[in-house]
Length: 481
Image (cartoon, rainbow, N blue to C red; front, side, top):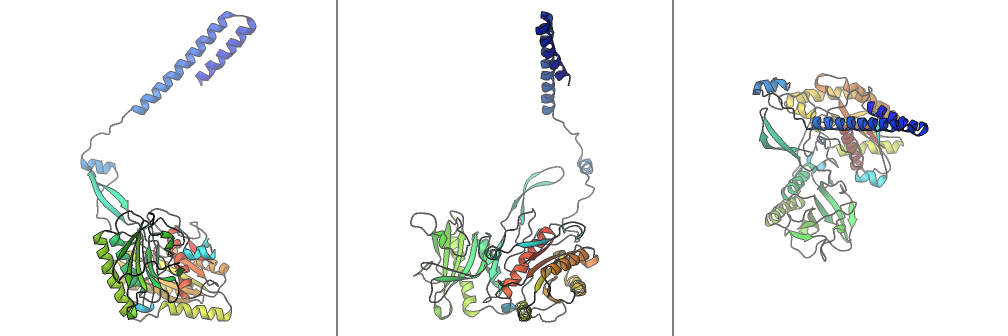
């Protein structure tokens, strides 16, 4: 402030010197400007010295250092079980008659925008979010890690007085999963996940060549790329591979002159920068080679290694056995021992009844946020929590049908329009957020409204699954119209 005043006075002195013809006023102006410049230089020097200062903390013994950091005790991580658990897909039931969800429920440690699914892109539907993290819903559920999501690998890189310093890196997430009714979803998807991890592939899928046409249907897929299809079919101008024996891996290089064109990989919605693609022809019934096990990579090397080729052949032999002999069915039941009816049949019944009556239908999937933490305690605690959850949902269903869709996951069918369903869902989530005991931590609610785009139960459940995943990630109720 003083520097500014000196500059102003110097300007005034110069003006007066000109008007009054007093040479001494020029000298006064020069003195004022020199003083202002000196103060400016001194201030800059003091600020520069402060920036270079190094404050050295006092040396403390380990115990005092821990106390200074607010650490009064060290316990193994995971000793407490009252945190929210990770979110996995509602488990598949009844073996060969069931399927896994179209996409996994990934819960990353950092907030990421949820990519629209392929079905959302094609139909133009938009997710509708009910409310937010305001008083209506209570506080949002915490953001736990989850299996097949952003799992962190800790690598020791140093030691300090407090403990080891660890470098954390992320493993890639599986963004798209899908399987047709032909196979047991839980078994087939587990095999494809294992192959993808073994060869470090971007996408692994099982294709079936359709009879009498240059087209392939996607029978099963596991991908780290959100543009991968979770089902459907695509056409090609010529077979992807031809004239090769079954179980003999064929690795093709993409992008080079005369190489394989990655645009032919129709199991992507858009062209992807694939550098290598491996095809394993499989023999189906009557030894007809109409199946392909495909793995692709965005790296320059990997699939063409001898070890990777051997792995592709072994996994191809396993998948071929599923094609020719099928997968033995698994018998699953509820905690009470009552056999479960396939969820696909339940959804199909409700869809048929709703369309016959010309009314709306909403499928709401409700997941207990602390399901994994409760599951780690054992089947007794899971059974108790499941019973309490079902009791609360039946009381809040307002005449809707409540069916078990997995461990601590329920589906509720309601014949109501979207606005009424939105109010009901918000009341349900707000009420569950106030619960304690086994239901502490609240629930996530994802809803799909039945529309013309839903040709079968798989499409409706896939939409509800996508809405449930987004609800778990955002803490809000989500409806897909």
